[in-house]
Length: 300
Length: 160
Ligand SMILES: Cc1cc2nc3c(=O)[nH]c(=O)nc-3n(C[C@H](O)[C@H](O)[C@H](O)COP(=O)(O)OP(=O)(O)OC[C@H]3O[C@@H](n4cnc5c(N)ncnc54)[C@H](O)[C@@H]3O)c2cc1C
Ligand code: FES
Ligand code: FES
Image 1 (cartoon, helix red, strand yellow):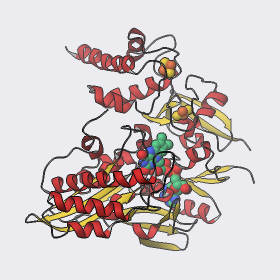
Image 2 (image 1 turned 60 degrees about the vertical axis):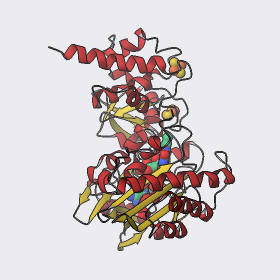
Image 3 (image 1 turned 180 degrees about the vertical axis):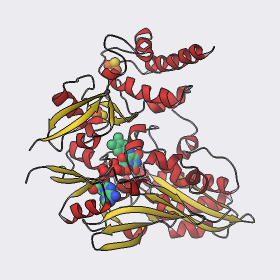
Image 4 (image 1 turned 90 degrees about the vertical axis):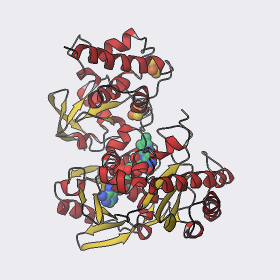
């Protein structure tokens, strides 16, 4: 068979192509770049989904935000509701690659590529987001935790198209932050990242969700870290215990970018920064988006 | 097997015959013959291949040419009329922002997009807008100065 690319104008056309064995390409910033780098050759049969208007919408209701799979990192991080209510997701999308990467790369592609270092997974997991997967046979909804199965793996079947990500809006009094360790300010891949989503009522932490990025084979929550915060007043001691619990739950790898022991040591630092910024935002204090840069002390 | 497509480049609709998996960079350089955009890394790291797609920067080495159909493609050749220079291009020359010149087409494209988005960018915003463009020669300072001076020049021109 020779290489082919069909451009879908309707979701049905895309689904028919998937059923016939084609691989979807949205922005191509993982799929095409991976082929250029020699990671995996480009699948022979491709279906371009970038024109599907139904998958490009951001729909807001009083209870949730539904982000179409084709929403770019740039549009997501510029959305007022995402910045105000789902701030950790704005932090994450605002630091993906360069402006060109953020304009071309999509949320759907980020999730389906399922890198353990992907930026949006931690925030979406902590906000309790779910995805809609659709095939010619029908639709189903899956939590982010059920979707992400390991490095580069999801539980979606090859004929399923990710249509949208639904994110419930957290209650009032919630603040959130995604922080990443950065050697440089843009064009970076997470060496260690942490998400914190905390809800305060009368100064007490009533809910806490904490997740790690690039510190385990798939992005996952750290229950012990959450338990260390819940019921506290967000004092330095509680924050320190939570950050240490996050690092203890990590199972980092050593690779060209960092050793496992360095990643674990940095998990404490990044975890602390994410929790502190989330608490500050929950109290109504202003922390710039993206938080990572500011939390590094503005170092160039 | 090659397929026929029409690419709208710098305002002109150009019919091309390309392989379905060719990058936009390869299509524009090899099938159209516009060689302003450069191939540095061929995997989205260096920005030498940067083009505008509907006014926004894209790493053309890693973007499929067929996905650029029905969209407005701008290369460095399209930034000014033939034989002329845009104010940004002149500013690059005045500030010594061009040494070997390999990064220059990509820098100009990224900076053009920035100046359309933001009339009065801070140095910080310029550096972030150019973060996907690598330069091995200049140390970036002159390039950032050239972009800031262009913005300042436009602001001065628009004062009645
Ligand atoms: C220079 C550079 C820097 C980067 N920096 C970062 C970074 O800082 N953080 C980060 O997280 N990522 C980063 N990335 C990775 C990439 O940009 C993101 O993961 C992006 O969101 C991928 O989206 P895409 O639309 O380009 O995906 P594509 O490459 O089009 O697709 C990726 C995968 O998802 C599948 N897919 C896409 N859409 C769907 C869908 N709707 N349904 C089913 N399957 C689908 C494809 O078949 C493919 O397997 C970077 C990439 C580059 C080139
Ligand atoms: S050649 Fe495209 S980014 Fe280097
Ligand atoms: S001038 Fe030589 S790479 Fe920039």
